[in-house]
Length: 369
View 1 (cartoon, rainbow, N blue to C red):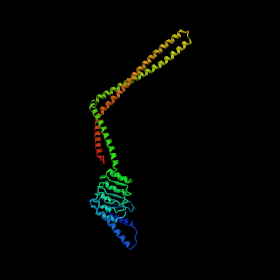
View 2 (cartoon, rainbow, N blue to C red; view 1 turned 90 degrees about the horizontal axis):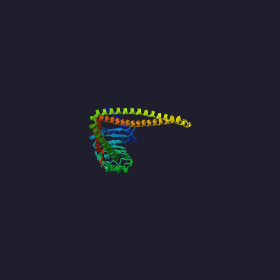
View 3 (cartoon, one colour; view 1 turned 180 degrees about the horizontal axis):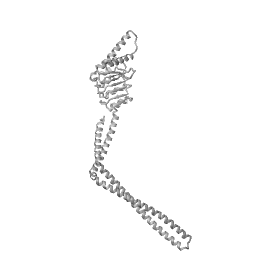
View 4 (tube, rainbow, N blue to C red; view 1 turned 120 degrees about the horizontal axis):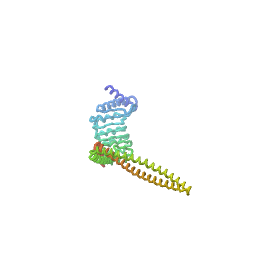
């Protein structure tokens, strides 16, 4: 492993030297040698305090210096090692022991584009030293003491597009003022949007709890009133179903009788019309007149029976509809009784979950600023 690490460091230093400008022989060769030794020593010193130096991409000259695992080993003094390295574009200082004094050294790295200062002792005073970083695009001050006054200064950085201010004293008003001065910026978290979303979530949680309370009340009522009657309600539902089937059968039979009565009326109507026509054709034939009169009487009787059949059918259909509705209600009541215990337990779980969600929604709601 040491041999592999040694060759990697040599390759890194060689790459650093290749990125340096060409110089003439003599004094230039001596200078080149000194720069090589300084770069090699800087890499070694950075690694000794738990840091790492690496190229961002294969074949590129841009460097990333990572101290995020160095912890307390890295203080303000050790950042002087960076002076010997050219083209550092990313610097990670998360959870190190640096202070605002270290930012004087960081402010000299004019090639820096991404800077990570999470959970360090950096404050507004330290940010003042970063205003010389005209290439800076990303800055993370999560968990620091930076305030509204500190981020206000960052509006002067022309290429800064991303800023993370989570877990800092920065307020919504401070972010709003910064975005007004530097509209190209994206600030994370977006406190205004986060509060809006939290309020929507809180409103939804309250509605969920209200609905859950109502469902639990209904479930408890069914559990107390219907569950003990489960067997009786099942028996009543079966009887109601049988009665509905019987009423339907009777109605279907009466429907057939009504259809037959209507057909008989049509037949008697036809016969009466024929008899009347014959009597009109032979007005002197008394026998035809008597037959026509008899046919009319038969027609009247057929119509009466048809009306009676229709009335009986209509009444039976109403009774059948009522029986079917009663059967459906009985089945529904029986089903509610059969499921009352399970529904009650489920309603209690939903209610407990809704209360917990409301608690979390209130906890996550950012305080008004």
